[in-house]
Length: 314
Image 1 (cartoon, one colour):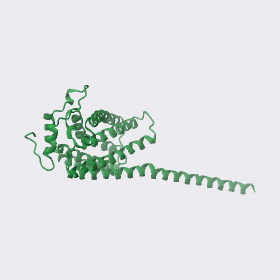
Image 2 (image 1 turned 60 degrees about the vertical axis):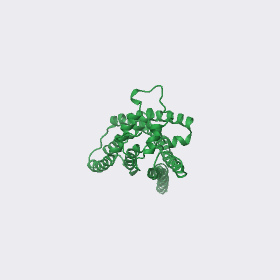
Image 3 (image 1 turned 180 degrees about the vertical axis):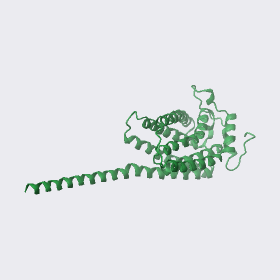
């Protein structure tokens, strides 16, 4: 039965909660786990109720975030940049550790779940909200708020701030907080992919900021490629869940959420592909063209110098 404090509507479906509360499917709880990771139904109820009552605050936080970065860039325009190298290393390293632990927890759970119940259940069963994986899924949703701090470093260090960066931060925050109380089962894969990519991405940021190692360009290309793959999988999972519901099957989500999630992932896919082309394809061509032009100018200059020298000799 649903918690008395929870109010279920079309946006917050009761059916999904009933499946979660009454599910006989085992919830993965590793032997080596901590007490604080035990996420029972009482804690699930409390977290669902909190996000159901407070998800709209994510819109307020996003608006404040947009205002702060806008005026922050204006404020920094005629001021010297802050270095903040040590702070950035600590920040990125902390998020990397968090993401690595979350990725490992969710990966092991997902593999075990697929082995036990199959691919379809892994997409449509909302049991990821309970147990150890439920705890890390809850932390994942909460983490979207402090991750806005990434942009603070970009603004204060006067680095290039692209549309993809702040658009991604805002939409992920709002979508995650809105979706959590809906018990959307496909989000299992959204959490899994995001944890995985972020574990690599923040490790890269920490190493780059530390200047301890010289990171080759191919690492950037691999990370961006993984981000593109993440968005493609997001679209695919949404499409698969929609096909199950369209054929009369049960899948713990809503049609409205599937549409919103699909459009969000599709927009990310387009933006990341555009970023990849602009950064690693077009820019390389421009650099090559400039290098060839410079080489041609040098050859022409050498030829002119030789001609002048020959005239002087004659």
